[in-house]
Length: 430
Image 1 (tube, rainbow, N blue to C red):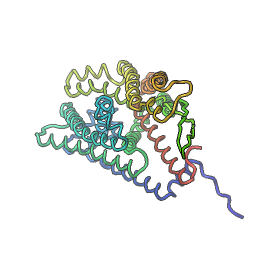
Image 2 (image 1 turned 45 degrees about the vertical axis):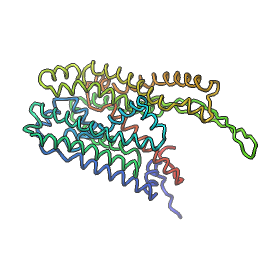
Image 3 (image 1 turned 30 degrees about the horizontal axis):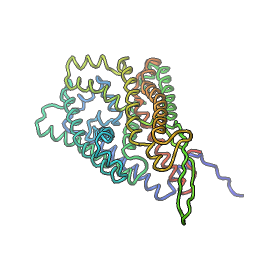
C-alpha cells in the first residue's frame, strides 16, 4: 500500500516550491544575504559616541525613539548606517516634485526607460548633499544633548563622522539596488522593511514589561494594532476600476480592419502610498529637531507642545496626512497623463467624450477616491494615539511603519506569485 501524503498548507507549499526553482531560490538567498550585510552594518557604531549618554538621550526624547524604530535600532546605536536610506527617499520625493515643474525633467520622464535612468542618476547626486545635511544635523543634536553624546570633536573628527554617515547611506542605497536587480522585491523597500521589523522585538519586550502592570491595556492595544493592519491591507488593495474600450483601424493588404477590445484602469484608493505619512511626519518633526539642536528650556517647551502623547501632535498629523495625500496624488496623476495616453492608443471611456471630457471625468473620480483614501489613511495614522486613549498604553508602533511592512510584504508576495505562476506552481493566495 502506498502511503498517503499529507497535503501541506498552501503558504508552506508555496515556500517549498519557491526553494525548488533554482533561479528563484538564488534570488531569495541573495536577498537574505544582502539583508544580513545590512544588519551587520547596523551594529558598527561611531567610535566617538558615548553609549551611556546616548541611552539617556533616547529615554528622555520620545521623538528620537520613534525615528529609531524606523532605522531598526541604528540610530540608538549611532551606527555608521544611522541615517538609513531616508536621505535617498527625501531626494526621490524632491525629484518627483521637480519633474512636473522643470521642463527638462519633464522631457526626460517622457523618454521612457532611458529617461528614468537619468532621473535616477540625478536622484543619487541629490542624495549626497541630503545625507551630508542630515549627518550634520544628527551630529549637532548629539553634541548639544545633556549630557553630550559627542564632545571634544575637532574639525577633522566632525568631517570624518559626516563622511562616514554619508558613505553608510550611499552603501545602503547600493545594496538596495542590488536586491532590485538580482533579488526579490524592491530593494530600497526591503531594507526599510527589515529595519522596521528588526525594531519589533524590542517593542514586544517593552510591552511584556508593561503587561505586568497593565495586561488588559496591552492586550487591547495589540487588538487595535491588528485592526490597523487589516485596515492597511484593505487600503492598499482597494481600487476603483474605470472601464475602457479600444477601437482601432488597421490596414492589411489594402483592406481596413476594425479591432476592438475592453479593459479597465485601476485607480487605487490610496495611490499616494506611504509618502503623505513621511511628509507629515517630516513637517511635525522639523520644530522638534530644531528644538533639540538649540537645547535648553526651548527644547522642553516644544516637547510639551508636540510630544507624541499630546492632542496637538496628532491633530496636526491627521490634517497634514489628508493635505499631503491630495497634494501627492494630484502630482502623480498629472504625470501619468491618462487622457492623452488613452487618446493616442485609441481608447475611450464609454459615455465620456475623449480629450477634455475624459480629463474632467477622471479628475472628478480621482478627487472622490482621494477623499476616501486620505481620510482612511489619516485615521490609520492616528491609530496609535486612539489606542493610547482607549488602553492608556503608548507603544511606539508607528502607522507609517506598519504601512511600510504590510505594503512591502504584499508587494514581495505578488512578485513571488508571478515567479511561481511562470513555472506553473501554485502561489500563496488561492
